[in-house]
Length: 123
Image (cartoon, rainbow, N blue to C red):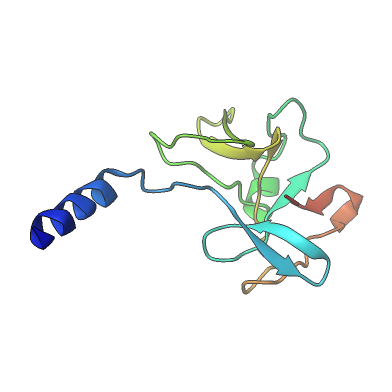
């Protein structure tokens, strides 16, 4: 009976979506923020509008979008927006989410306030 139960549980885990949540919450010196699965800080961009990214080319090299895998399913305040370059990007409460290349380790928040248009994503 125990083997059957374990097999059932393993089967359910294998069939679950690979990325159940696009972001998590973490603590920073500026309060609670959204992070990616590796604990890296996530940011929003004031120039985005209506859930659509305005960050491409050099901007996206410095502020990589938090991309969704094909087949990912959004839940709650998270959604997936199609970028004009064809990628799928996670959004939170309508705001596209990004990392920052100058953040070197989990907990870094060096992108907050850059050019007064980049801000830590907050739950």
